[in-house]
Length: 260
Ligand SMILES: C[S@@+](CC[C@H](N)C(=O)[O-])C[C@H]1O[C@@H](n2cnc3c(N)ncnc32)[C@H](O)[C@@H]1O
Image (cartoon, rainbow, N blue to C red; front, top):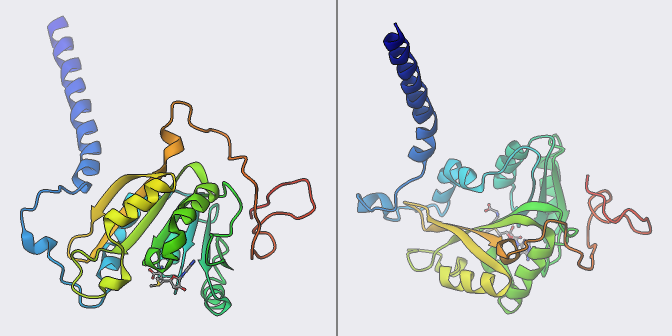
């Protein structure tokens, strides 16, 4: 009898193990291998310039945006990515959709009139123009090469102020080394990583998006890797620029920042 009990408890344990393996195996299956088994799958077939958008599922998985997150879509353009990010953060979160001209911001406001978590605003050319420690992730799709080359390292430092200590910056960009067209509208990976490192960031992961001419590079702050990483928000001087009411600092009040 005891023997039977032992056998059945062993069998139950085995079943539990199998179930756990089945539960976690999809997570592994989603992580693609870097092994090039089919060169054609890697080859760049993009004629539209937007093939990377077909990788939206993979890209969003890598960004790991969660409900309630605050994300900055820097250079949001027509808001294609903003919409996907807004779905991920949900009504409890926020997607700040930054653009440099008020005409583009007005278009974004119209498009997202019914999506209150999307907050379009006009940002300055040389900084994101959000309060310190206000976002978990900054996303730049086809925007990095638009930033002023002379001041990009300083831009990374500005990003370090705006992003929370454990936050990240994700860059989706044309890779000129392999681009068949539009090479000027991209940034060499080596340039990007070098500038990011000088500006206080480290690459956490870099993905070549198969069949496109784009890469996705995700960075974390160097400070997060120190022996005593910052846990409290930065205490840097705060700036408040070009933000609509409710988005930025509450001037003249003792409450430093008010993010809606
Ligand atoms: C090629 S579009 C990409 C739009 C969008 N991110 C996408 O992938 O569909 C580049 C956008 O970056 C914006 N941009 C250029 N310089 C910028 C800056 N310094 N700060 C924020 N946005 C900028 C432009 O206005 C333009 O809408």
